[in-house]
Image (cartoon, rainbow, N blue to C red; front, top):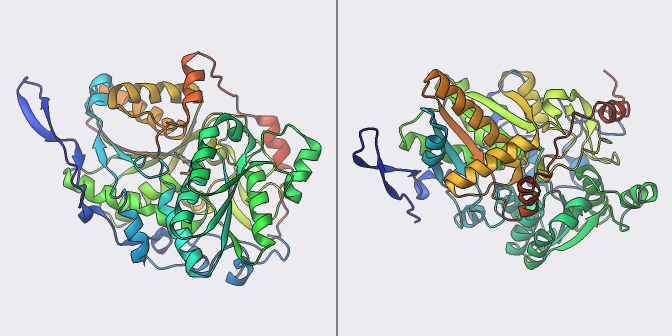
Length: 471
Ligand SMILES: *Cc1c(COP(=O)(O)O)cnc(C)c1O
């Protein structure tokens, strides 16, 4: 059992010392034993996934070359809860439950009556929320006799998480890392290799998809969409290999609900009901992981929480993308999913939040956005890094560039409270630390970081390449 509830002496308004806890419920009683599937509680079912050739709904057999059957069944499941297998629980216990921390020093710096809590996923082996799904994905693949996993990685967080998980379950792991990040973040590659994975810069000469991109642009910085094409192509070519995706899909969002289930219990322990939940969205998994359990309670009438997604202005799939069927990858090899998309050929500008540079948004989250159950906004990277630096200087954790998007919105909310006197309870997902992202902080501190305008022309061009789907 892990006990990490540090009593902290702080001064209250009258100057007296009082003891208040800053971290909540850190023993196993906060750990859920089931994942939560929000599909069971939605007022309308999500649209079907379509076969890219036949244009009719895919069945489990269509997905079998890419994923193990246990994950396919989770992908299409309508069950409200799914038990977490004991071998997965056993690995989760290495770092879960993760702390829920009240950001008292940030509150004081902002002079706000708001109460700010962050659920910190940076304590995991990879330094982010990604191992929450990497571990069950490796477990189910190993259980079905798979030998090797392929995947893509943008910022390097997902590749590190899968490399770690694969090593625990005796699987080989091969990672296509987006070229820009391969160059910018050599130590993410070292980390993956330390866990035993093989890492390629993407686009690579190893796949048809990679060679096609290199033929057009030998200096391509790569994109998540291209790297996904490469990893999918390699998995489809070998019956003992499967592909693993770190975000976007229903089963990934499902696994991430351990974050929100713990936060529900920890907030109750703190005697709080949240008014606002804020998370960053790349493919949507950390945001969904935190928010879905609270959404269940909201749909049941137990809270009235606002749920806010924050995405980069340079890649604003939820707020500016079209809600339509598109491919999940650049080469057009994946099934067609209905989602908010900027077009599968869209290559976002090289913002530092590599994990948020994806052309689409989780289909499930896109559907939930259409149902009006969440709100979304887009922000430029400079104000996000400013919030990240303020967080580091008050709370002592250097956030990954991705969650600084959520922090910028948290700071805004807290400022509004400072003006209105409202005592809002704000909860955010601090989904990773930025220890491998220091070159991004270097650029920010040197004043070299630029904000990119919304890339109208590139998006319009990419949207002209959407696949046509019969109504
Ligand atoms: C991967 C990643 C993201 C983006 O992915 P989501 O599925 O939207 O969570 C955000 N933050 C961190 C730290 C990541 O590693």
